[in-house]
Image (cartoon, rainbow, N blue to C red; front, side, top):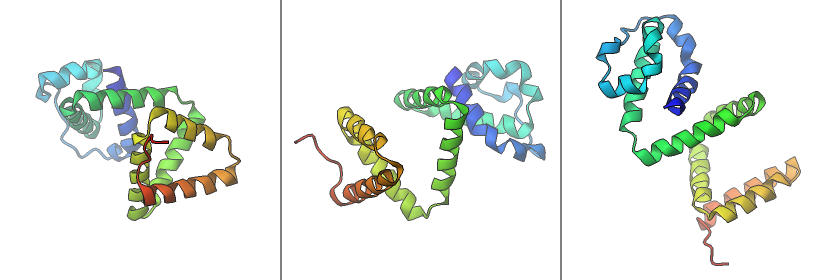
Length: 163
């Protein structure tokens, strides 16, 4: 549950300024389902102090969380634990990369998503090997390597462990 609250805080922290002009209805604590109240119980003492827009966003997010299959929840919790382990500079870099990603054309975003999905389908030892190769390259060679890998993934699909 702490992972959920952390995820919620991170996801909802960026749009916090939008709630400064609070023309939302808000959500009364009693309007939340029993499951939502249990999930958000750490927020109960200060629920009424939250901006109404934030209450609405948290209520929506908690409803989505509760409808998320357990295996996806576990994956999300691992990702949030990874995020918490990053220092402030690493988090800044991740945010910058996400901004860059969102500025790409939709076709390029989809290409990156497909490539990432293919990478995730590789055997763990193969992913580790590729990460190690990438980490050991100078920056300019990293860029060329990444472009080459993207092209190969586009042409051949996921590699198998047949070698």
